Image (tube, rainbow, N blue to C red; front, side, top):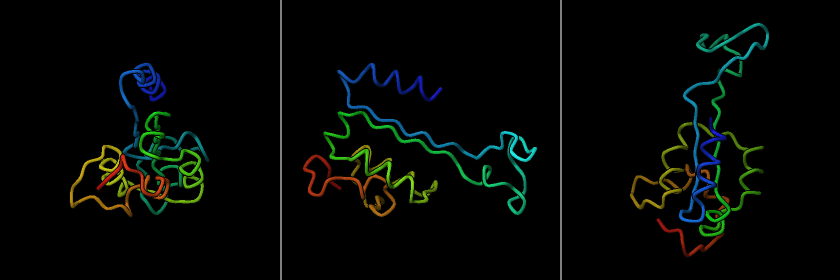
Length: 122
């Protein structure tokens, strides 16, 4: 389903600067160790239920226009742990919304933005 949403956004790139954020509301067991679905008590739940999937897709135009390095994001995804706590400021930053509630330290894109990018301000 997410791949279809990305394909739709890609088809609109000639008119719009596009991006997509997908964040599941829970992890899921798919048969690892005979466990399926989700909802086990935290103390016995496998990591697959504790880790919530998140996907961030940025069009090439978005990356260029707002100075975001996809290579940097890929490297950070391998070494950084993110949570739902990062969603709010990441969305504000992604959309360029200026508000005092925005916290650059919670924005996943912050370390991967080019310094001094004139198209991004908060």
